Each structure stands twice: as C-alpha cells, then as structure tokens.
Amino acid sequence: MHWGHVLLIVLLTMVITIASTYWVLKTYIFTTSFTPVVLSTKEEETLKAKLHALGYEPEFSSRPMNKKESDEIDKDGFLKPEHYSEENAPHEINFTERELNALLAKNTDLAQKLAIDLADNLVSAKLLIPLEEDFPVLGGKTLRLNAGIGMAYQHDKPVIVLKGVSIMGIPIPNAWLGGMKNIDLVSEFGVDPGFWKSFSEGVEDIQVTDGQINIKLKE
Image 1 (cartoon, rainbow, N blue to C red):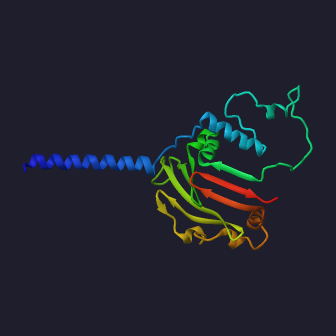
Image 2: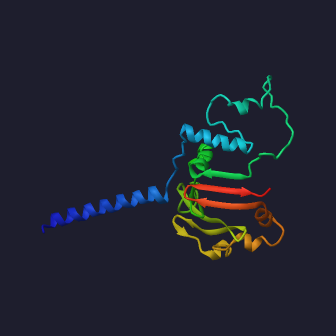
Image 3: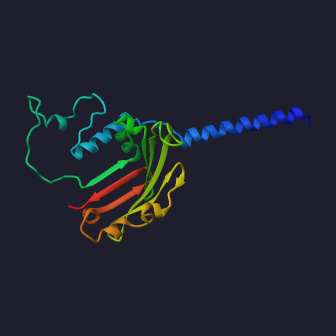
C-alpha cells in the first residue's frame, strides 16, 4: 500500500476517534441540559385532576376552571370556606414518569438539570451540576450525577434501598457513601423513633413499575 494511503487512513481514523470521543463527552459526560417533558392535552388534564385531588392547583395553561374548581370560588372571586372531612378523600398517590418530569418542567431551569426514570422497583435520577469557571480541572463544565433508589413493599412494610450513586459515569465506592449502599433504610433506621419509623407506619403499599409509581397511605 502506498504511504499516502496509509497516512490518509491514519488521519481518517484520528478524525473519527476525536469526533466519537467529543460526541460521547458532549452527550453523556458533559451534557449541558435535558429537554423538558411536555405533556399532551389529555395527559395535562389527567395530571391536573390528580393534583387537584391532593389539594394542589398548578397552572400549566390559561384554560377556564372546570365545574369542581369554579364551585370552590364565590361570586367575589374568593375561596369558599368548608368543613374538614376525610370522606371520599384519596389515600393513594400515583404518577407516571412523564407526569413527574412535567412537574419539574414548571421550573424550566430545574427540568433541564434533573430527570427522573421509573422502572420495576427502581427510581432513578439524573442531575446536571454546572461547575464554576474557577473550579479545578473541570471549571466551566457540567458535572453529571446519577443515582438509583430501590422502592417496594415487602413483608408488610416499605423497602427503600440506595442502589448507588455515580459521578461522570463512575460509581462512588460504598465506603464513601457511609456504607449505605444496598441497605434497606427502613429496616436499618425504622426501629427507633424518627423519620423512617413514621414513614413506614404511614405507608400501606408502594408499587413502582416501568413508567409508573403508586403509593397507598394508611388511614
């Protein structure tokens, strides 16, 4: 083979390698933002109904109030007082993965920096952290952090397990996480009075499936 052909192949290989490396770094390592989730009209109305049942009224769009909402406002535009009652009150909280990410999209900056993924018994999160220009070595870059938390309901109690945390695709050693990796936090800390004990006693069921999370609360 002529030496010119060899040189051309070497140069072409270098260009492909550099371009591939740049694409991997730009896409997976130094990603600057995520694309916020935008719900369809039907998905938006479903999410509003769920939030309304929980007592939260988001403003995704400038649509007119439905009958249930308008019945809570008097003729002067003020919220009507009402007696407290738990009759027919929902005891379940359920959201889809798209709904959770759409809620983040209400804060545009947060939606571009945080994304949630739901899989079977697993809640994962991706977080982008911009670094200051004077930060050593990686100054001006965006740090990528991934974390996974196992969620389930077994033996009449919730199970919450930290699966791991990684930075720039590199898993953080368990020792650096205080030895908390792959430990059921409810079993570990739910014996003594505190958050985990109260959390466990107030939950009747947790189901996390592909793209869906459902939490049932006790009465």
